[in-house]
Length: 211
Image 1: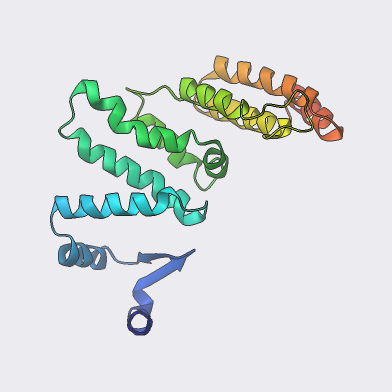
Image 2 (image 1 turned 90 degrees about the vertical axis):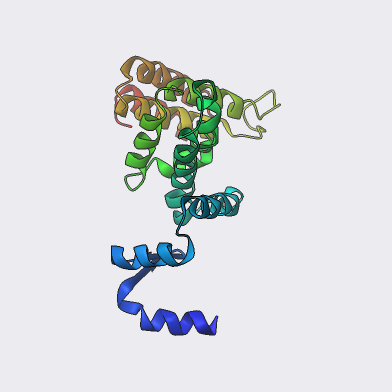
């Protein structure tokens, strides 16, 4: 810790940090670190795999949203160099599973990360259809409740309705207009089932096109 503190002081003008993430201001410093500690592609791949394992079970944070999907994409690109067509879906599956995790999707569907979300699905477009994958994942997520009513659900109905709303907007932004409309209709119907004023207000706003 003392050594790192001294190093951080010396390199203060060359580093920036946020939420535990340290960035280099100059590409030359980044290149120097890579050349010193992981000069070969195989060594870089080992570091990528180690970081994936580190982030996999880490709680949601700015750093995880920034790095975890990117690392999975880089890992997939590495294996795509030697993969056969029959293996393409399996190669990209870790990234697919990451993006359809509902809580992570909600965290990424904000101005700071939404362009990355689109980019990741674009690179997987030949093997995964984003609408199909999100619909499948949402239905699996929504069945986490064994309740007969709406008040004692493991996953609150309002949370599912909110996810449907977000997904309808994401589909629209991805130029999947028919699927966006269908998801919006389902969201409105779900909001109407939610108890209290929140559900009524949200369904009314959606029907007016305000959300």
